[in-house]
Image (cartoon, each protein chain N blue to C red):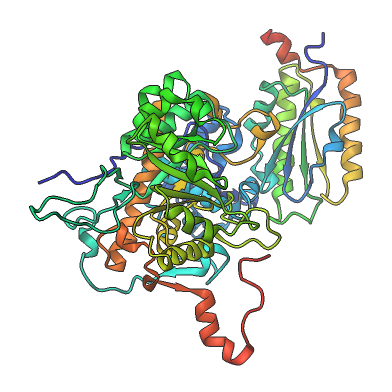
Length: 472
Length: 134
């Protein structure tokens, strides 16, 4: 029996205190003193005891915000001197898309490798912008059973990056009459990318590549940044090249399995020259989703050429580039996917999507919208404790000294995050009654969209929505 | 003897007592530590600030009866007074540590507080603990 794919996680405690959310304060002066019922001694997380230790070592006050917000001390203190507070620094990290909760939960997953559980159910709004206006349908009471998905009931998360033949044809003797290229398969529908900002020191890049190598995925890196030390990781690297510079890297292209070339009109004329360097090279074309481009038409035209994968990019928040009222990646992907279906080329090419993927659920939602897999960059930095504070962009020091991260530790954190994400992907697939991630592609029947439900319920009364929920 | 050109201030403040603006800190290096409530400022945090090289430490708390947690500013004041006595005892001069009742809306008075602290530092000199470490 072949070995089942699994991501082995190992706890990697943070090097710096993560920006915690909650703390407890003693806000009154009437503590009973040596009270026998003192809640500080009863804290199940030993927060108060730990705080004394931190105080004795005269640490910076970050340790104060490690409370788990269970409310026990607040409720049980006989004098009622405690109150729960939210860390003011916590409210300021990230931005409207990469919210403090996203960052905090990503740190937790990178630390423990476990699925984050709030313990009190979902407390957010009913619907929101972007992926929050889309729900997955988990009402299937079918196999695989929920308790078996991490063991005996195997759910396949493999995707292919190579082009598939339109159809198979056979000779009279039963041999194949069409050329079938070797299949390049990765065991997870997630690829990595070198982030376009942040501290990208040698140690940071090696951490990402090592993690990609360990879990069997690949990482997109600018060809100019693939220096000699990274050559041994060639099989895990997808160099990013351009029309004007791809011929400068013959040694690199000979060593890697896949390459990505930036889209330009007429780019398809270069594919033969790329294949001349390495005939087995899998070719991806990187296409930025700009408002001034007819990206659906471009993808259809590209799918008719000899490429394997189309990699579409939205911005870090999943929005269209260069638009005053940008569309969200889920709508853009849907158009591209349906455009390829109309052109009857969807089965031949693969689509990878970048931008706005910051949680495990976004992977499944992106695939439902029509992608084969996703490409992530910022979550890799966040896994290595990045706070997205942007200090590095102003040449200021990194608060978590990312540049000096030890590659073994950094890769461990990324592997933990991917382990937690994969478990969540399996949970969702299991609940949707799907045994294979490839079957989820374009499977909108397993999703509900706020726009559709709103239109169905309220449009007959109030008329249709005039401005998209994603705008503003 | 001066160890660094600009005086270093560490500023502990409650969320509601101070709003940082860049123009406030001309002529000095300031590290701000934002607290959910000033009562979270423990004595060790104040001493730690001096150990880290601060020439003066300021604690900004809400005005009386304006504290969101009722007695938070009173608790902070007690701690500051305690640490002042420690500083006096060890010869570091308790004047390096001060507590003020402020409001985030009143940036003018906070500017005055910083200016006053810088003037006082010219008299009492830099953090002597740093000379000791050197």
